[in-house]
Image (cartoon, rainbow, N blue to C red):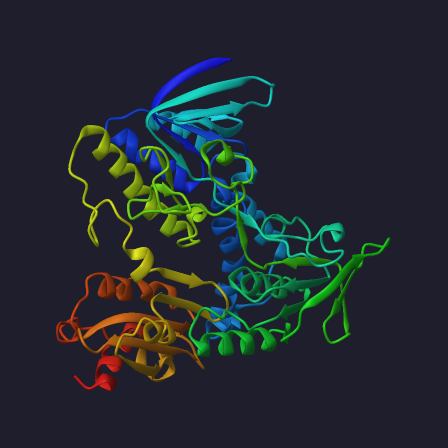
Length: 479
């Protein structure tokens, strides 16, 4: 068995693992990264980039059709083949040469194969050629293996070879009929995309659409999906699934009805990729989410550090926030705190300190690229009240903003601001409407910076833009 030693070993070369390794190397330490699939991970090939490429062309087409002058210039429908080709380019045609080249330029060693923790600070890598390499970390091992699609325990579902988010993101052909089990982000975005490609889409939702968002979000997205020809069935579950010899999928529902489709997409949550990474060798449960302390060191069920604190977990695998940008944020904190501890430097572990990921609890931004878009950050009104904050909720009709009318004829949208009355700061902000994604970062800054409402009055929005909603919300608040 070959052996090598580095300051830090990272298991998983997705965006999170790459960022951890990069921060470590920038801090003057050595790093090796282990990857069994494509360098770049889920986001690069089966999630963020290819899925947004699938959605963007239809969004641009709809935007043109909402504007006189541009509408008349549009002479055809969506070119689905061209959309898929563009998607392929954003997924680098499922080749990771560019990402591997970047690792090399950054001074990060890459080991291809399956990484398993074999003992404290030791990771064994099983390569495709049957060669095993033992890597030892002087300071830390970081688990950044991400998550995979969860397939519910529905009779016949696994045997029916369902799509997960990976197949939906990388499909080379558009099914005539697509059934989607779930009502979250993946379900609504893929329903939007495949309906625009001409599929007959049926969404089967147990609890509601986009349940974690403000209630008006699910209502508007559901209405929009239905207007696009999508059948949205609320309050139903699949009790059994089968695929016949002709390839048709038959889904039996709790109400006894049956939905037939050419493909079924399961979008019912995620599960951690920790089943076979050696957690059992260090007293942890294989297949479980990893629990971490404030500086993202892994702790056991009793809350004690694993070993002397040499094991870290960043990204989806710690279940704090299952979003790529938030995982990269954690990665920066992890890389920097490992360097600080290795060099004996002070650790800034208080709220909003350099070595903690405070925003995971207080200011997580997210965009859902449906039509209309959904952009949110911080707490919903319900979450703020559950946290026992004394809040005031301020709503405003985005269509009443002058910039919205210029942006598109018939613009429809809604904005909500959740204010902590005791501190007079915003703790939550949600927008739904065409092209609201680019408005979100202003709200994120206001929440992270805890900018008092009295000071926000002096942040004058340009006229006439949709950002004028900030002024209207403050006016509605009454300051």
